[in-house]
Length: 320
Image 1 (cartoon, rainbow, N blue to C red):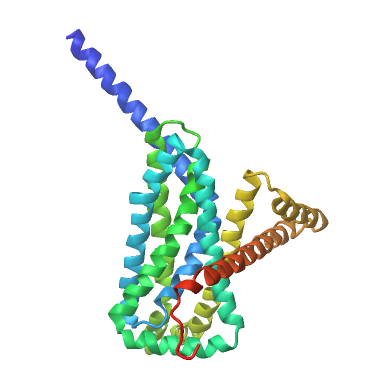
Image 2 (tube, one colour):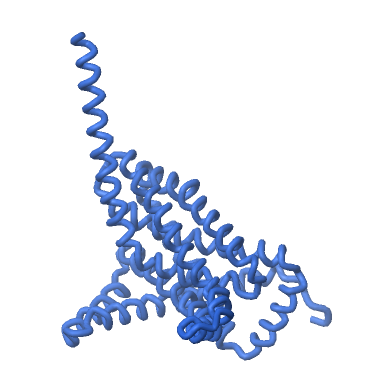
């Protein structure tokens, strides 16, 4: 009898420990999600541009495929990799994040370059024609692959921020927290993205009802969503630059090159003191702009290196 009571006492103790672990994990997951909010917003801004130019009936399936790829990125690759690196090789986390930041900066620079170069407008038109010639399936697969690649970098930053906020040393709590962050953030981001890309369809249905409120609201959605998506695509381009630049600035500071971080921080603090009312907003704008400029410069350097390094592999054109 005493043995049974001792066993039940041990089970109760384990249950209490498990409950405490789950409660601690839930609290830390909420804290980690809040810390990663900036990157989450960037992720939501970047994603909708991958469904533009495709059939309306394929928009939600595409968002679903990207969401599934994002969840796989976080749970199957980034979560185990983050735990292993934090245990066995924590010094490698920063360089790997910086490589990801450089990739984002490169992508952002390429989009800025295409936007500002007049000759690329004609090239963009040719690309659209080439995309249409591929057919919906090929174009869809290409866009989904591109979205998942970009998501991998943003997800890595989210998971790294989450890992850095976890105070519990045990791997069980860390795993629970990172898993919760992965599921919650993926569901939140791609739920918002699904609402954004289907808002124009909702607008059409509201217009068809032609009610006193539904009619004007539907027309506003129908006519407002294309420019809104363009704006969101532009914000996504900026997001690549300021997130990538921010990763690089923070990484350089960890390696002892603190000048960019000190300059940005100094400007932010000076404006915060000079403008007590809107200081936080202006400070954030200054910080984001500084990081974006660093990202733009790094992206330009990366693009130059890629262009020069790719010269030997390009086929010579006839007559050259």
